Length: 386
Length: 97
Image 1 (cartoon, rainbow over the protein chains, first blue to last red):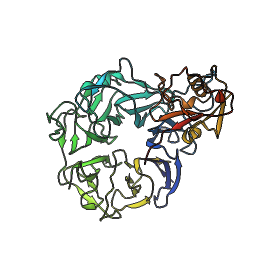
Image 2: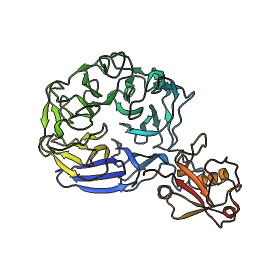
Image 3: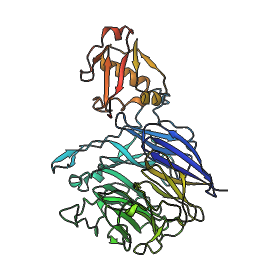
Image 4: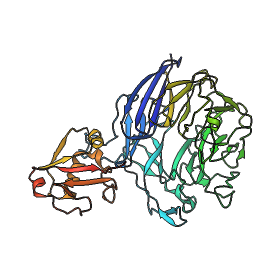
């Protein structure tokens, strides 16, 4: 019988949460890396027991961790107490160095500011190679490891896509979304807060902004600017990788041409501000968002925690509330904190800044709190296991 | 032999308990950190930057009731530390209130 494993990153450690295919009873294992901020954990699609994790701290910087047994044990790749086959310790799995001339980006006061590595926001394992993984980092850049996370190399051309005009938002200038096209290994989409969405069609050699149609009249002097939009999250369905759904700072957007142009599909949402967005595992036109009241008030409208589902690819949205708190709820749901499993019916999961992880085993119709009192949740990834 | 006390999170990361004991090439601040990182490569980048070797902003170096955080790498450690009578302390700077 299939099983589900949730990889949950929080402000104070990581948790590995498992259930059988019924998804009624959950076993919670953790905290791993207690006391550290765990921005993101994600397993390899080709080897689900190979899990990469971003462990970070304001004091001690970035650590990359890897598990090869489904999250039971962890080690920094190539940096543990053992040495390399050559007998030399490497300790380079946390070494993220920008390629070539570091360059500058726009700073809060309008001046140019040098790129400075701060942390890894998102890890995206390759769809085909367990040793290959991509890392989205702050200050925004994309790195790749092809040796299981031991060493990292940047795709510097991304920062040449008008990088001098990118400017950090309040949460930092992080590269938070990495989408790999399952039908075209040369095509990757990424998104940066607050620079926008970008695409490569040649495996990272060149990149271009794909923000046409986004309008940011309250964030940018030119609402239609080529870069500078505060994209919060992008999602796609693997069967239709040219169709993208985006939760922008304000506005839920859709593209039917791989990001070449976008149109708004916020429709009847009570607020079109929010962070996560995801697509149903079996229905490419079914999309989930969690509306948040505003950029100044990061909590659900009316104190009601509601997931909204569209079965029409946007515009028509229905609230999903059964099992979710419908009064006095003032948590947030961060951009990497929603995920779906691949079971039938599709499971949907999200974590909150209040430390709850909610799950639905029926496509969002009903919800249960899988756990209620974790530290603030930064990320949730669902793995469907054989 | 120089005794080094790590902050608890770095002890966990390096899989060590209590103090670590090092034989640096020179009894200096920089050489001690070099020896520490050679013995425990996972600590590279956590105390000082990989490339510039600058101390991370919220890490401090204490020894014999002195703050050595701002001293240059070639600074000789206090004699009591060099002799192993006192530890060299690596501290996560106070945060909170």
